[in-house]
Length: 111
Image 1 (cartoon, rainbow, N blue to C red):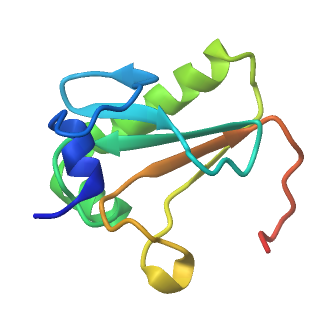
Image 2 (cartoon, one colour; image 1 turned 90 degrees about the vertical axis):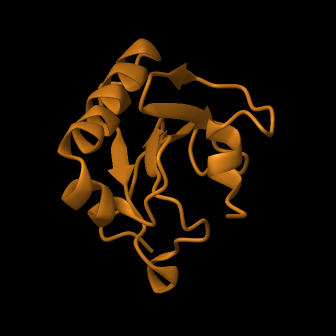
Image 3 (cartoon, one colour; image 1 turned 60 degrees about the vertical axis):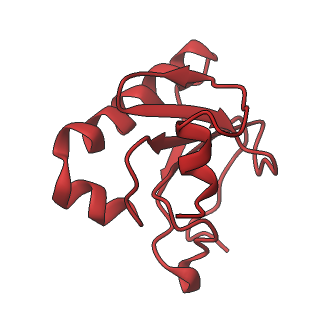
């Protein structure tokens, strides 16, 4: 499989981890859309967030609890979490990843 995030998880491509556990890791987004823009990624390959939720509720929960801890550790009490699911929704890497964004005001609905 030629998956960028799997290569990060397997340490085939070096990357600076913001966080790492047995099942997930987090990295800063290379094209941030907010002052805080972190990607939380399961080490096991899932195509999208719903696949994670169906297959492994513990990993799914860890993504969100870790997002909260990272935001808190950076001094953010308000933040947004997003799974883009499918190309029409903006997913460009088809390995599940949760976006954690904070540090600016977000509009609703998103653009």
